[in-house]
Image 1 (cartoon, rainbow, N blue to C red):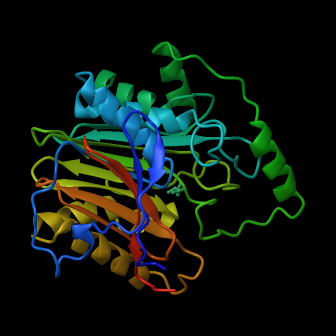
Image 2: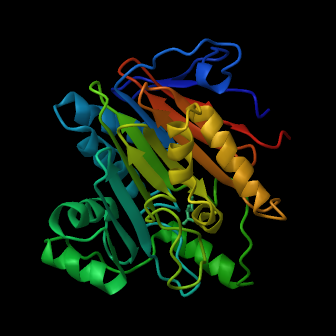
Length: 329
Ligand code: ASP
């Protein structure tokens, strides 16, 4: 099943339909397909919610926005998605019942901003962009990030769990046990990377982090080089999954540096997964997945376990692809 690729084509106007059996993903099998220059502009984002997020990102490009505007607009869509329990204020809370958010944004010229452990902000990705553009810093955390948001005119949202999150939290409190589950319900940060028609890149990453984490825990998503890294000279990468394991290998930076040394995006993602696995004795309960684009517009995706999918958008189509994984089921 891990090699089955499921393609859902979604017109950029929003209607979704299934195209079974189309083969693609030349980037997934470099031995069979000669390298092609990828189509640009191109947007990749993690998980199912990448499909509508890609639509929002491409719409922004279409109306004259920059690639930075596009990756911000794309994940803002996910930050508002009430069905999503891992991104935005409707995300599952920490063990104290408080939802705290992490986000980062980066451009291909090396500029970046992030916020961590922030509360009551509906769009942490936009706050991360303000940190990048309006402060001399890269990262603001916790109460300081919240105060900066107020100074920048961001409204503070009421601190209540969404109805869905409240039900899940009440269930969790019956045992109060935290055990990461390696599936889509537990890990669905959105990471988005994109390249425009001129080869400029940008990326964004936003999450409520792991459900029922310790209060104060920060994952990989706001850590530049872990959850996200972008360099116009080489390419871009983003990550999802158990943040601690991604931070420990500087996952996204590692992938960009491997591409700098000549690896394809696919080879670089696979090597990052190998590295992650080599550093963790028991990977049964650890899921992590990576996405990458190089400056030619070629793509790569790989994960520790099956079940990691991503959305890939060009001007022609927006498709959902199951990535390969290190361990076949
Ligand atoms: N990477 C995120 C974190 O560790 C979790 C996720 O991908 O869902 O906070």
